[in-house]
Length: 182
Image (cartoon, rainbow, N blue to C red; front, side, top):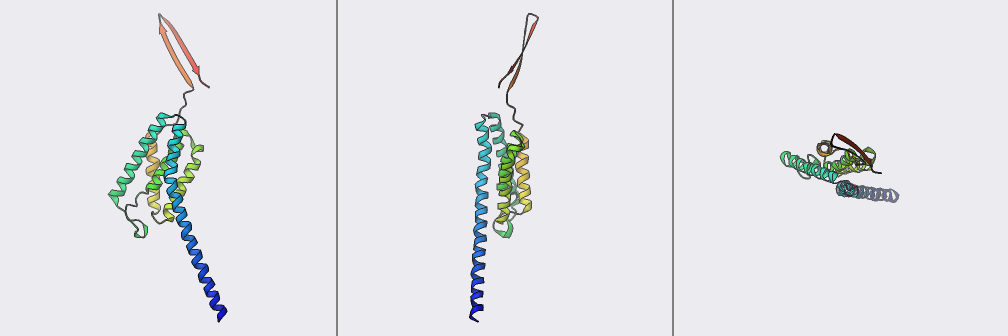
C-alpha cells in the first residue's frame, strides 16, 4: 500500500512539473512573438536606412501606417471575441499583420532570399498568437493578408542607380552619354 501511494505521489509531482513546464514554454513562446512584433519592422526599416534607400523608407512607412489603420479599424468595427473569451478585438491579429508587413516589405523591395528569415519570424509570431490563445486561424490569416496587402499597395522593387543615360542637343548636333557606376 505504501509503494502504491508513493507511485501516485510521484506521478502527481511529475504531472504538476510537466504542466508547469508547458505553461512556462507557452509564456516563452508568447514573449518571443512579442519581441518579433517589434524586431521584424525594425529590421525592415533599418535595412532601408543602411542602404540609404529613402524611397524604400517612405514606402515602408506608408505601408506600416496603412496596415495599422486597417488592422485596428477592423478590430474596432468587428469586435470579435478572443478564443476562450479572454478579451475582445481579435480580428485580425495585429502581431501577425505587423510582422507579415515587415517580412513582405523585405521580399517585395529587396528580394525573396533576403525575406526568408523575416517570414520565419512572422510565421513564428502567428503561431505564438494561436499558442497563447489570443487568436484563431482566421484572425491569423486575415492579419497576414492585411500586412502583405498593405505592402503591395506601396512597395516597388529596389533599383540601384548604377546606370545613367543622358542626351544633349544643340546646333543640329546630338550627344548621347552613358555612365555606369561600380
